[in-house]
Every structure is written in structure tokens, then in C-alpha cells.
Length: 299
Image 1 (cartoon, helix red, strand yellow):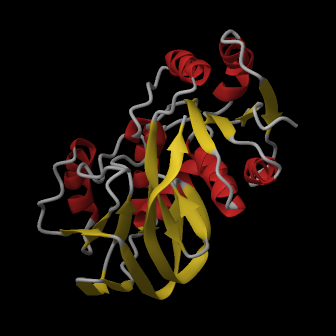
Image 2: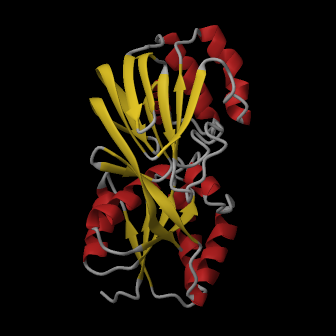
């Protein structure tokens, strides 16, 4: 394999099958720029990460992923766990496309593919971004502990073709099941918290779930993570906060604590669900998070 070959990784199931239906056109648009391209399809969860790591280990230096935030998550972990230099390009074909929004990648997948092809043909790069870590995993956009992880798990179980609204539906379902408020001990260099909480959200980018502007101040190239902690709240209060979460005007609400951090630890009174870039993680009690500044180049 030539190191000059661009490896295109496509998850056919991303965006509830949209990526698979768009595969031929994505390949056509990239090849129209006379790029040395090779297509790789992923299968089960974790397969794309394994493929990316193997190719980067073998010298691949330009990786494109066509998919949603879950596909980006796997590609980032494949690159970062390899430890070798490789740049990442993204064609957004998922449901929420939070990473694409954070990187100013057009959400129109055809337009995004054409712009990417032009940059690749010219040998240009888009930008360099920070990458977050949680325990032994990496994330590009955000991590969540508590309620938002539960919502993510429920949303992933739905197969309804309703786009971002699947996350709103999942919130209603999560509230019906009850809202847990475990005790969290949170500490960073200049901040500590000890008490019950609905969730702790740690953001590298400003959006989660496609429609929630969880951290409007977040920038994925400023060397910081944005921590949001929500006090225990009732179902009724969650309903009144939802419009603010969508517009990004919740930050000054009494129940919300916000800090900018470069590292932090979260210890829970009980094993908790968490997610990284919308991918649900195993139940854990301790979460160690940090930011790796300027860790990944984007194509």
C-alpha cells in the first residue's frame, strides 16, 4: 500500500443507512479530483476503528471517514491509538453530525465532499484540533456522564427516520424511566464539586445530539474542555430547560455549573453510564479526563 493512497472508510449504516446509499456518489466526487483512493467498508461496532488503526500502523497518512459522529469516534481512536501521524477528513452522513458542526464542515454531504476533494488535490489541510481523553479512550466532540449517556443509549435503540428528533424522543423516554442523581466527586486544578447531580457534560465542541447547544463557548482548538454540571432537577424543570439547551442560553441558569478545564476526574457513588461522541461506554465509577492540545490535523 502506498502511503499516498487516501483511505476512505465508510460505515454503510451511518445515518440510518444514508451513508451506504451515498457511497457511489462520494467515491465519484473524490475520484473526480484524480485522487488515489481506496474504499474500506466497516461492519460491526469497532470494525472501523480496527481498520483505521491497521492502515495507519502500515503507513496511511490520509484518512477519510464518511459517516456520523460514531464513525468519527472510531476513526479518531484508530488514529490516536496507533500513535503515528495521520490526518482525518470527514464527509458528514450521520444523524447529529455534531463534529462536523464544530469544525465548520458543511452539513450538505455533497458540498462537503467537493470541498474536501479540492483541498486534497491542492495538498491543503483544514485545521488542527484538540482531542479529549477519558480513561483509555479518545473523543473528538464530547463526553457525558449520567442522564445524557442514558438518553444516548435510548436514542441508539430507535430506528425511526426522524433525524435529530430521535434525541428529543429519547429524553422523554428517559424521564419516564426516572432521573437518577448519583453523588459525584468532581475535581480539577482549581475547581471541586461534591454532591448529587443529574449529569456532567464535558465538551470539546459546542453541540451534542444534533440539536442541543450544550457548550456554546466550546472551541475544539483552544486547548480547553468545557465542563457543565446539572444539579438534580424535576421532570417539569427539565422540560422548561430544553428550549434553553437547544438555543445555548442555559449556561446562566441556577442549576448549571460551568467551568473551563484542561483535566478533571469524576468519581461516582455508583457505576454510571457514560458516552464519548455518542458512543455508550461500559459502566464505570471513575472517569479521568484531559485535553490533548493540537493533537489531530483535519484534511
